[in-house]
Image (cartoon, rainbow, N blue to C red):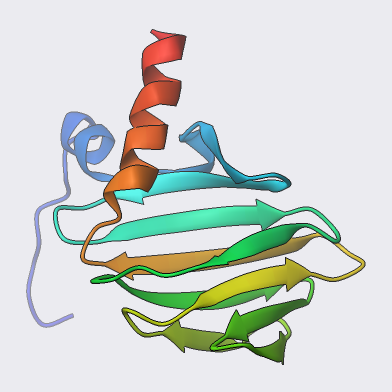
Length: 133
């Protein structure tokens, strides 16, 4: 590095860094649970889909979504067509387009990014946190 940077204090570290596995799981659909991390203008979801689980086809009128498969395989559904996805594959779901997913014979881990933020996911997280308080 060409610049010298001051190390964050332990308090600054705790206030700034999130370990997603420490965020409570939220049920998104039957067999689909996620750690939700919210920003001001985006939502990040670390989801675990059980084998053969189905994420129903739906539409976000104004929200774009990127989905990255980390492990397992699934069929992503976009505009009535299925796209087989394996680890490392990414699909873009444009706003206003029908999409969903179907996990195959093994569990699947995915990362979803939503922009702008997906309020109903964040509301589900708030409800889980409120029950734990």
